[in-house]
Length: 380
Image 1: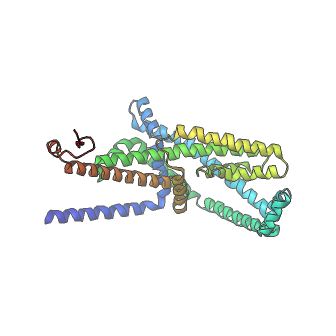
Image 2: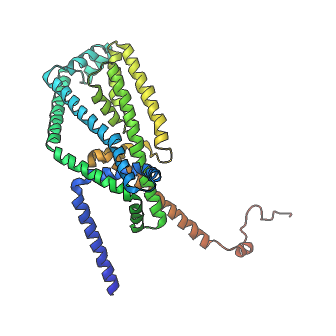
Image 3: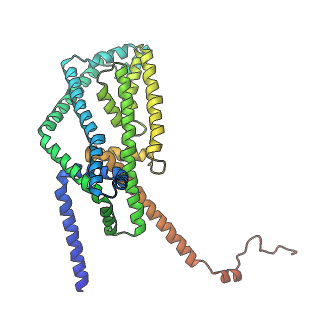
C-alpha cells in the first residue's frame, strides 16, 4: 500500500508545482511565448551556425540572437512606432474635420445610379447624415483608443524593455541548450513514442509554418498594398499597409477588405485608371503573392483547411490578443492531429479484432461459404 500512496502523492506534488510555476510565469507570458516561437523558427539556422563555428554553442547562440534582433525585432519596433504616429495623426485629422469621410461618402453616393440610390432609400440606408454621424463617432472612438494605447505604451516603456530583455535572454539559452532540452521534454511526456512523435512533429511544423509562412506572406501583401496606396496618393499608406498585412492572416477575406472598397470608390467616382490599377494590384499581384509564396514557405502537407484557419485565428485572437494568431491555429492543428491518431488507433483495433474473430485457413476449407461460384447448378 505504501508505494501506490507515495506515487500518488508525488504525482499531486508534481501537478501542484507545475501549476505554480506556470502561474508565476504568466506576467511575462508574451515574452516567453515569443522567445519559444523564435527559437523554433530559427533552430535550423542554429544547427548551421553550430556546424560553421565548430560546435561552439555560446558563439552560435549569440550570433543567432543578433540575427533575430536585426531581422525581426528592430524592423517590427520601427514599423510599430511609425504606425502609432501615423494612425494618431489620421484620427486627429478626422476629429478636427480636416479629413471629412462624410464628403467621400456623399461623393460616392452621387455617383450611384438612380435605381441603386432609390433602393438604398427604400431599405433605410440612404440617410447620409446618420451615416456621417456613425462614421464620426467611430473615428472619435478609434482616436481615443489609439491615443490611450500610445499613452499606455509610453507609460509601460520600462515593462516593454524588461519583457524584451527576458525574451532575448531566454532565446539565448533556448538556442544554446534547445536540442538537449527538447530531448528531455520528449522523455518526460507521459505518452507513447508514437504519440509523442506525431504530436510534437505537428506542433513544430505548424508553429514554423504559421510564423515563417503566414507572417512573410502577410508582410509581403501588406507591403505591396501599402506601396500601391502610396503610389496612388492615398492618405496614410503605412497604416493601410499594416492593416492589410494584419488582415492577410485571415484566409478568404484578407487584404481585399481594405483595397476593394477604395478601388470601388475610384471606379464609382470616375477615376477609372486608379481604380483599374488598384484592382490589378489587389487581384493579380497580392493574390499571386499568396498563391506563389504560401506553398513554398508553408508547404501543402502542413496547410490546414481555410475555414479552420479562419475560425481558429479569430477565436485565438479574441482570447489571447495578438498572440492568438499563432496559438489559435496551433491548438486547431493539435486538435486535428490528436483526433487523427485516435481514429487510426481505433481502426487498427477494429482490424485486429476482426482478424482474431475470423476463422483459420483450415476452418475456412471445411466451411467454405456458399457463393454463386461454388454452388452446383442443376445438371452439373
